[in-house]
Image 1 (tube, rainbow, N blue to C red):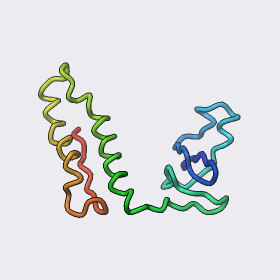
Image 2 (cartoon, rainbow, N blue to C red):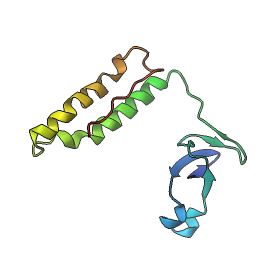
Image 3 (cartoon, one colour):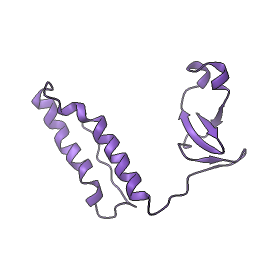
Image 4 (cartoon, rainbow, N blue to C red):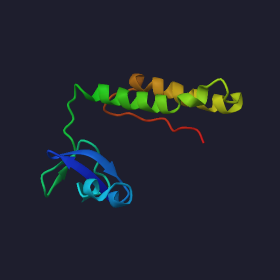
Amino acid sequence: MAWAYVKDGVVIDRFRVDPYTIFYPEYAQNFIEAPDDVDHYWTFDGTTWSPPAIDPNQLPLQIRAQRNQLLQASDWTQATDVPNAFKNKWVAYRQALRDVPQQQGFPNDVVWPIPPQ
């Protein structure tokens, strides 16, 4: 079960935990129970949940933004105080992220690299 905060018919925020356990009641009451696949930018008309319409001109930018977030989230793995053995595990993953725009089928068919364990 997911919970969505909907403003003007658009999902602004989403959680998989009951909002009453993490927010004060006045804010939590703004969340609506939603199907698990509902995510940011979906729309809700009071009855039906719909995925966002994808503008084909914006898709490459959205994919690159997602790639940049994944790179940023793994920046810490390359810090000077991280052991080389650990750091080296992440080098190929980070390069694969940088190469996402060069994949055949980009931006419609992206294969995301899997981070090392």
